[in-house]
Length: 164
Image (tube, rainbow, N blue to C red; front, side, top):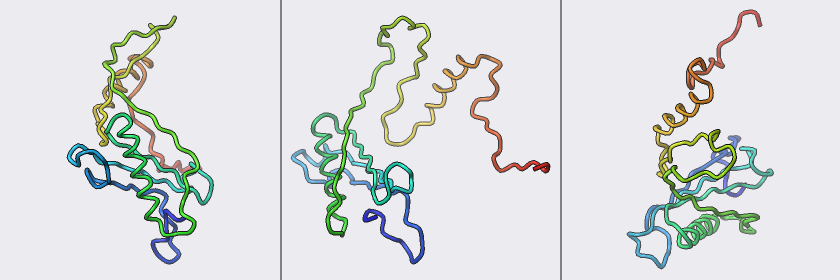
């Protein structure tokens, strides 16, 4: 796997890596101060997301629109150009989408709008915001009611029963 060379003799290759292009480190027609960082999460076939010998790249940036799409393409091309193998890695398939924030108060058109549970609008920061659990807990309580048990309490998987 060219994106995951062996890190030591007889060591398994890594299953994932995070590549960050800091603000302004990629060539662009935009002023460097206006270019946000690009994060690329690289997963090898050991993650089960693709066939053996291939990798999946998840790239993200906060730059909206066509500028963001071009920035992501530049970042992926730059990363792949650093891989020292012949032939160079090729992109077999690509998809792009844009997230946008909403107030959460938009009207829902449907016959069962009273059965729709809405989550609070999450943060679009790259770092995970723990406050998302508050919104999930509120929806969970609406589903299971007061007698639903404890939220996010799981049985110990390492506990062993003497009878086994």
